[in-house]
Length: 185
Image (cartoon, rainbow, N blue to C red; front, side):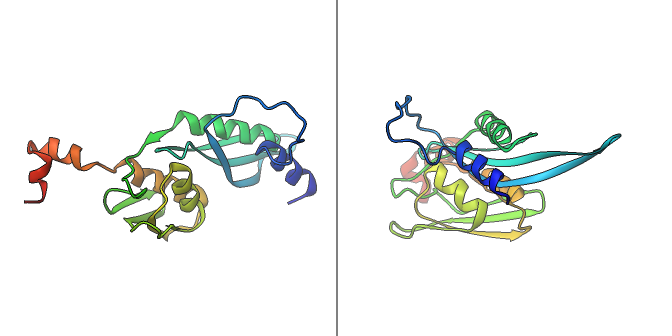
């Protein structure tokens, strides 16, 4: 990465602020840039360069989304990615131990993700984009494994796909038409 891109990335993600600057209202949403790529399109006059940013947005309380933004500069791409991520938010159930209710698989493109609940104190055992998605969703104890592709966008989408299919014990009991106490019998 060139120096200009790094500086633009730092400014877009809110790094290196002056201490005496007046604080704006603090939002609960956090954004993390997973990847920034320089992409080009061949047009009549030559190549047109632009940037693609993959951003994960979450509130660490059960809401998370993945967004992609493209623009001619890095800051614009990150802003578009954040807006796209907020459009595609999902709600996920989190247990009292800050884990997921049950094991789940997710698919996104050529990537597959397997997630399993973990005991308190385990932490987030996952790699790459899946780790970022789980942390911003508010999951603190989980085991996850990426299979297939190592593309960050597809892995993030696979993680969101898996988290969106999670169901609570109350939902399962209601679907089956039985009391929650009779679920294990």
